[in-house]
Amino acid sequence: MGGGGQLTEPGETSAGGGRAGNVYTWDEVQKHCHRNDQWLVINRKVYNITQWAKRHPGGVRVISHYAGEDATEAFVAFHPNPKFVQKFLKPLLIGELAVTEPSQDQNKNAAVAADFEALRSRAESMGLFRAQPLFFFLHLGHILLLEVLAWMTVWLWGTSWTTTLLCSFILAIAQAQAGWLQHDFGHLSVFKMSSWNHIFHKFIIGHLKGASGNWWNHRHFQHHAKPNVFSKDPDVNMLHVFVVGESQPVEYGIKKIKYMPYHHQHQYFFLVGPPLLIPVYFHIQILRTMFSRRDWVDLAWSMSYYLRYFCCYAPFFGLLGSVALISFVRFLESHWFVWVTQMNHLPMNIDHEKRQDWLSMQLNATCNIEQSPFNDWFSGHLNFQIEHHLFPTMPRHNYQVLAPLVRALCEKHGIPYQVKTLWRGIVDVIRSLKNSGDLWLDAYLHK
Image 1 (cartoon, rainbow, N blue to C red):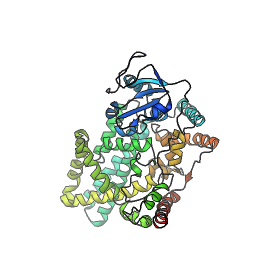
Image 2: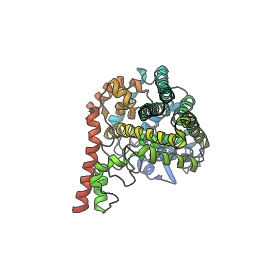
Image 3: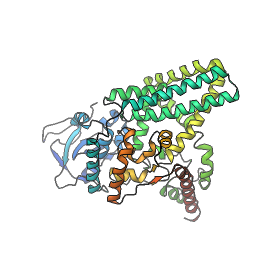
Image 4: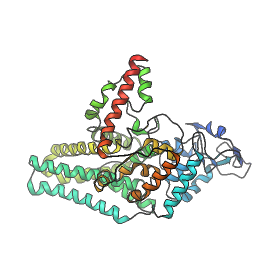
């Protein structure tokens, strides 16, 4: 996992271009934020990650998003065992911040950061980072049961339109729930040993869904590192199909950019958003990523899904019929996935990099949906999106316990903590698209 600078004795030049005993100011650190020159700070220690970033297990982009700034809160949030990871940082150490320099850089609030660290310590003392494996295995069991019921539907009652639709709906439920479950293992929130989380993650996202674990990790961790930040969060990279937030529509309008009639995006969203994201865009991106990166392990897991699927359904529907069935299943799943994921983020603040502290950044970009047994199941507990973003490695069954503590911290510092009904969350997705489209049209015509 090495490849960056080498740990040196004080005063001795390191391979990273600095000195292990050197002290730096924030102005000096912030200059090293380019693709071929990247430094970051963790717990006041300065590290040169320029070469090592390419070997970062979470992906080169997610760690590069913190180049030139303090990454302490993100480092702690993403790593269940920071002390273990620290040994991989030692060869990259080039110095530390000068004693006259604050621990937080730029717009990061020191008081908020200190209180958030205290909240994390309290959550740890309450055992909220300890998972209940039975909870997750029951979820896995009900997914496998749904898979069996879907197959038995056509085995017992044939391939009429009614049974085919019933089979499709059951498979779509299984696929959606498998998506929420792989999310848990992908965040290393089930087992203490990361290796076990990785194995189950590969099995669920690969064998049960036909996707790629590495593709998901590299994409999703960027979203968590810098949610709703243009050029850093891939989830707000709309490929010119949509304009989102308040700043991007105005920028596009002033520059007279019109790839689409954005003032109608709240209407064509129903045609190109929920129906196409998983069966078309994600499917193409996953295949392209696996082949371009020569990720043969993930490809093998993915192919095991298709082998099992066609062995089960080709005898009933034939090859083309089986392709049509899985396409319809993914069409249904895509609607479910889009509404659940977008209602927590799309109506929130979407803008360029502001370099805020962890709590402020996550609360600006996320909101919650009311708790209920149905909402918990329907969204895989992502109705507690705020708590999940603040503590991504925390097992989801503990979010409900943590939520009042997070709300109290937000009230103390005047940070909005939004909770919506499921219906309002869905409506706000469309409302936000319309508002952004109107901003674009006004800027396009009058600025």
